[in-house]
Image (cartoon, rainbow, N blue to C red; front, side, top):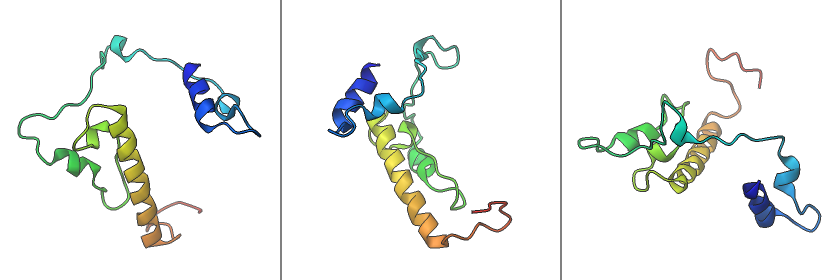
Length: 112
């Protein structure tokens, strides 16, 4: 609830003072520290893993992109790193789409 109020304060306007609150259909709060598969874990570079994050952030066959704090080369583990890599991947996705135009890939069942 506090997050929605903060977003409303940041993005609200005179015509729509509560854009986040009014658009939210519901939410789930998850305590990852109690989750048996994570226990609040985060990524951390290991010895000998130079270049792995850069490789993970590189497009796979020009069509599949990964983002998240685990793909940031400098600021992990943090939300800022996840946000930055998400923005970077979104920009790259737009560039890749512009390169291929609006035609579906060979073998695609897309009707776009």
